[in-house]
Image (tube, one colour):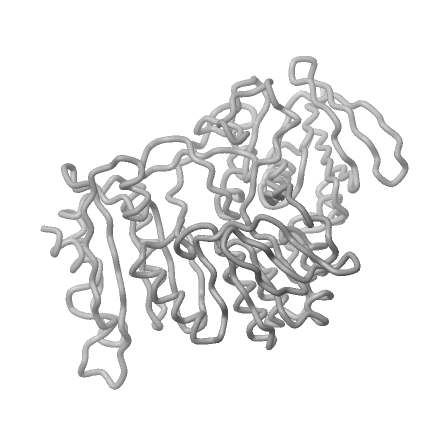
Length: 444
């Protein structure tokens, strides 16, 4: 009897799971349900597309329904799954093109439904030119509307918001960035780093409004003109909402274990609390190594790894997920920035007793013709000295050092061990005592 696999949703995790399953289980019947008319869109490339760095948005897709069909996968585009019964192993689907609904059955269910932007219910949210930023259609809308916009407000100072602000400024727009936290990028970076990035944005004429919550939008003739916050009003003829994401998991509500925000809890083999139901990507929680707890960390990197592991573990537990550090990077004008694990602020907020080493150094010896300033911070537990987080910022690209520290956190390393790790020295690249060794030694 042929194994029937149903996959709901197909961006990063879904595409990774499907391509691997097609290779591993050539006899299986794989059916994909996707409500959009495209798959596998790299939303992290939207700002590059808006800014004109990537001219053709088509290059931001790394798979197509046609490629999946070649693997023998049945892909139902523009199909919305209305309900799922995990006990009966049934799902009900609507074809959005024809309106016809039908039922299907499965032996294994893969939930890769991803996330959706948080849309606050407030006055004026329905005005024209108040737009979201998540998928391909959003990207196209933003680009079309930005052509005619002079003043653009971006709500939310996470990675996507920051990258859009920079792209809009480079297009010659007047830009306002609004966030309800006291600092931009506060999920990823401590104050020493956000002060520098805020200054870099401010130097380009970007208006940064922090510590204010948007309460409503006002407009004329149905189009937005003003963003109203708890402390002021800001003119804008285009508003992009980048407030964050919530997991898209209503279909399984009450059927599998979830975090309070609706993220599906999976074990290290990507299994949910229901047999034969797997989940991966932005729809689920993932083990966060700095704390050992389940956390919601929607990143494309996590999604691709988890999707691949669904395929490996579909029939029996085979390959464990190693957890995540939430490692990420961003380029803001000349600054190359990356972070992994917990910021000092996040660790303190979680009740951990931590210390940190913060180093301002040059990236290579001063006898070289050029060298750049580097800011590195490593956060560690006071008693065990276990590394829990790190951040780096420099005009030189030292972001790979954060990947190294990500491995250190994953492996539970201490600052004492970091002091004497074997790193190479070559004057073109670094100093005799590597920056990461220096951090360890300073802690000792």
